[in-house]
Length: 259
Picture: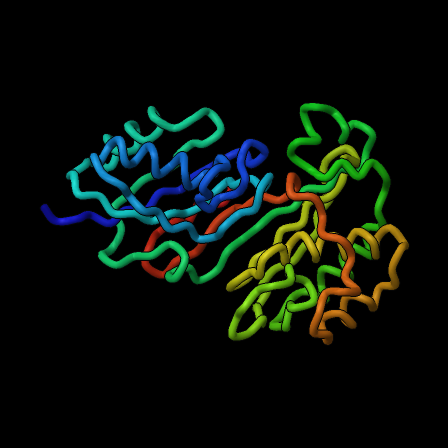
């Protein structure tokens, strides 16, 4: 029987997982999805994600690719996967993909969002699992200036986790914009790039917040972008405020999948 290549768009609440990537003992999103697909296909199904989210990080539009031997209609497979997944993972969309499609390698760009809570209500149990409950005001102009300095092609080694063995650390950021939330609740960073390094968004958010909080000078971000290590970087922002929003491909029509 010939194999069919599929893509799926996932949403998940990250607090119950040790991240996306399958692990031997800890619960992961990949482990849950592959367990459901194995039950449907009768054998192990390997999934590939557009981005490997860390423990506690959420997803609104994570894209995965996989292959099955059993023939399915799109709607039938969609219903079957969701029936087997736990409540903190949901498949928003399933469709046939071109042969050889790979969710990570074929991605043209990725988009993330980071949510910061600046009011006292950020510590509400209905909010703090899904944002950085900072609980104090930030300078909006300083946030905007810091974000503007992120846009462009830079070496982001100083804003990434140590121990990454990569041929280069250059990323092209096409969008980095802080926008206010309603009623003074805080700010949201929207950021898009061709690629992201491990914990890059969280390190950038940590730097932006310390600049907007008056704890670092505004030119520190540009200085670190000229550097080669992260020893002088601000601590990374906590994971619960980060969301994997969407992925763009030349081979898949995913327009309208941005939440």
